[in-house]
Length: 542
Image (cartoon, rainbow, N blue to C red; front, side):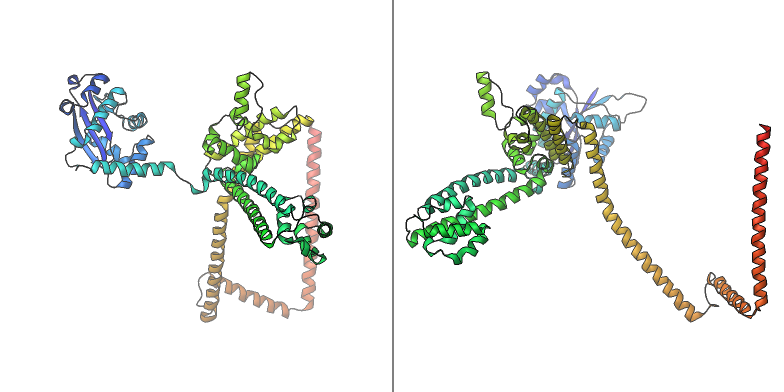
């Protein structure tokens, strides 16, 4: 049986015929040893046909199709033209060797060409790849390498499918910076307190918050200049007039030391830096919330933006977090405690970073482990939905959060929660309804526009008809307008006749109408009597 080889290169498709395989051997080891020798390998494998790609874009499309196991029309035409034809009733006397089993199965299904992909075929294709530039004479040295490099870059760029809005590295850097800022702001605020307390020690007990302390210290500057005129300004900063008066009274009897103007300037500058860092921390938190809603909306809706970002940063990426089982996600961040417990044969930790969620804090001490296991399960589902879904929505995250709330009620009050299947069905239905609503919005707008156009066109036609009636008259109108004009004339005649009729005739017409009503009443009574008689007869028969 003849063996044909299909080789997909960066420059085009090539079909080769392997004959005289006895010279190099029928097993893969013999082929592997003879591949390096071009004289022996060239006698066995010969080029039958070569189909170059039209452009770099065509090469990329063909490469994508081959990698996904799809046979393109170009490849099908190339094989049907150059391979022997196979009759429906008879078996093929040849086989086609391919490198990818997926595309081989697709070729055999569509064209009925028998395909094979094994170690022996792969070794032959390796030899073809090694000596490919010798098989095709028109190729210049360096052309094949350039084609391979360009196709490799374009293929990898298209395969990655880079989405700017879903870069989880931004979330990782933002949460790291947020944690660093929290530590720095706390340490700097303590330094401001210690530094300014040398001048005004009583302020620490009155103002406890770090940001407000820095703001007040910058406003006061020298305590000796503080008077009752500064109470409105202090009230605007603190938001409490009693505290503002207390600060003024404490400044009058303060036990602090006097500071030189240069020292005060340095304290004010450092307090301003702490305030700027606090403001930047707020902006960074808002940025983190928006990025989490873009990257992992369901995870953020379930467990919160900060805890979700910490889970992603600890796992390395959203994909790594989605690959983690729920048991790993549950103790993510407690690796030291886990290995210490394994080493000492003690109790393993129940939770890691997931402990910072509000659900674990709300659960009782007895149920914290159960709640952590259940929450880790739902977080694993939410991260997988966020990672592998095309459209981002918070529907599944909200439904999973409802399930966690129901489980909390079940542990506390004994209320039975809903089944997971019912919740997921409702989530899928709501997401489908949302998609349908989004699709209907543009169609509804187009329908409104078309209605407006129709109304405008109808109005224009009516106006044209009025103009024609005025200009041409009833005699020159269309065939449909003629009967209308005749009816109008008849109505006018009847009105004139009615006006000329005497009052006696009018009275007669009213009498006729009354007699007609009486006749109708008699007919209705007769019909009712007949129905009653028919019912009585049926009862007698029974």
